[in-house]
Length: 476
Image (cartoon, rainbow, N blue to C red; front, side):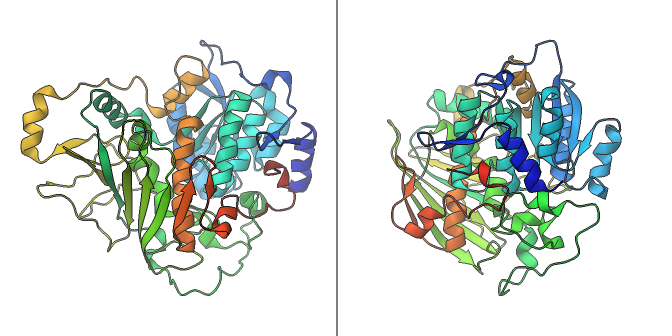
């Protein structure tokens, strides 16, 4: 059966309509999956389906299974015959397998409580919307989606369907989350005016030719790969190996570059607890080897956030690229890699002159920190030593990010990175990537959620029209 037939059938069963008032797809769904989906019984394991089971998706699946809180009921991946999916398949040899997530929901929706979405960025949105419309709790790898409007719809769907949601920025359940919260509430972190965020490690596209004149030429599709479903709603591209197996992150058409990949691990706590919301300006200050196809070799992007409540305006400057390392304060000390930072593409992060992290500048103090759950410290050392006896204590995390999601599905906890929190953060990255892609300054109206200085960029908040057979996910 053709994928568009599956898609139409699946959604016609729910009589897809459009809600003009909220600009969100309005589904008819069975009474079991209404707004305010019931939690899984506290004594039962969460019946979970893993969508995307190779590479990062496989790592997510194994971490969730390791909690002992879930029962694996389905595996879904567009390339079930590939080497990178075999490890997880071998762990669950009797579990039903699917190449197309729509077929999985058609056949097994009543046997699934929750799903993971560990697939390329461009595919997050349709899979997540399909799952939520069926009343399924959703764990989605960061960033939430590829376009500003997709994230807007996902946040509204979270409210509409009443499901548990979690974005996979693991640091939101580790020490930095609780430390930042406690230090902010105690008044130690206050009057923040500037943040420098940096990820200067090598990226996949750094060896590519920025003078390329077109996207890669088509190649034979591997026999085991369902390329049509891999593309999801994106305009058709002929298969090329440089789109697959993590290479998708390099292309504006599919991924979110270094900012989308690492931003959520570096500025997430500052964004939440400083209540930054959306910026008023995004300015690409430096883009080395800018081209229309893949991300620059180096980028420096300025995000300006306005005053909020009693807090001053904040500038966040993002740096990536090997030759684009920001200056750090005098007496900065050593830049170390937190040993708790997860592996990157199957290997440990390589130590750099300045490792992924941030510096936070207030009117009185300066803090430095790493990525993920890495804790902050005050610099220079002498001020830190003077403050040490009075530093606010903070609680130990009651659960890691994966257990937090499953416990929330059981009604025992609330997720720490639900779409309502992770959505605006991910939209910041969408605006940054848009400024990066077009090499143009963005002036943004936070209330209207519109780009007011550039009509073309404003239209790009929504993105291209979806492919035939996928319109219903975006039909606004």
